[in-house]
Length: 114
Image (tube, rainbow, N blue to C red; front, side, top):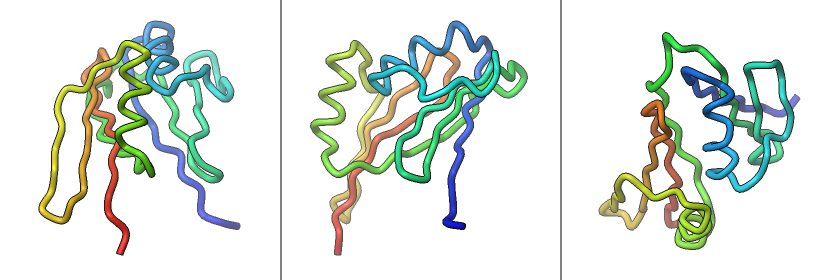
């Protein structure tokens, strides 16, 4: 079996968090795993899920690599979500960081290919 990635993000209130993630990802969840867990498919074998776990909320660090960072950031901005900060690295890589209402950090990034 090919490796699969399920990256989890704990939130205080699932029902309150889902609209933010729908705006961030630009679409509804791919499926609802439970009443308090929603899943977005981002790649053939990669998913991000948001789960109600109040004690763990706000501690996620997630980076999603994309081919066109500028277009992705523009799309997210068009949906009303603005980045918290931007970072550039010596090798030319760039990252744009966002925070959900619980304080979880989700970034889109681009890196040059050798």
